[in-house]
Length: 118
Image (tube, rainbow, N blue to C red; front, top):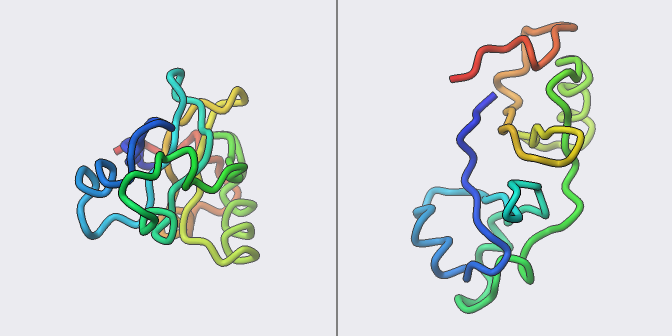
């Protein structure tokens, strides 16, 4: 699990987010002041007009997973929804990190919490 996830506040303007992330970034997580996940900005969202605040551009209601989810269940989710990554949060929605499909393979029934943080 990658604990360093590109993030922004809901009122931050897209022009500032894009500048900070750089041209190769695919997404950023929108967090409140307590690091609770509010939504995600994907590539299409980030392409909206410069002055747009993150809250107006984000995709809300992003699926998240707990650290104790079985890796196989997560791999199945990736395959079923054709997504390359997922957010890992506490039960209260506080962001813990990002898990990518390439890091799930080979864990079998192990849980994410057993993985070492980078």
